[in-house]
Length: 225
Image (cartoon, rainbow, N blue to C red):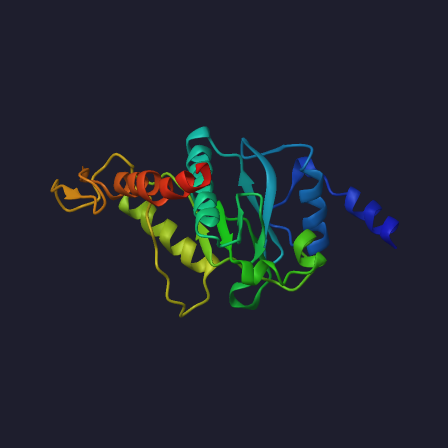
């Protein structure tokens, strides 16, 4: 039976994927498995991963360096936080798929960044860890990165984010990553660090200063002693 299914799946023409066709979940898994070692072109864009929603394949084109760098930085900072606060959760980037199962339909999405707490990850079995065949589970923190130039683009992005990742009626808090060099306060009023004489106009710089100069330094000094 397994060999017969493999032969059947191998008849799928990866160079001519039909996005209007309904695919089985096994076919979806087979296509993504084949794309681990190759890349196809869809509408002139390179694709080596699909998401899955109601039997339809959703292509995930490769992203430019600027977007990839933002995702990498978020993963790095989230990883630091995970270690420093002893969360012991798991962080994934764009290759990590989750069954969000919004509205009762099986939906495999791969957000740019996710965080799943240890209470979730420690209870996963082998099927959940290594395949998509186990019971669905979802992260508690999701990040999608995009380049938005207008209010209408933001509204479309916001609507898509809510519809794809959250069930109707769910309360959603959205956070927005701003340029780390811009002021995060309403004006340029400086505020002091409570531990030293440094002052700041930007929350990002203050957070970085406090973490490196106060939160982490005592721990490092104790280790050296």
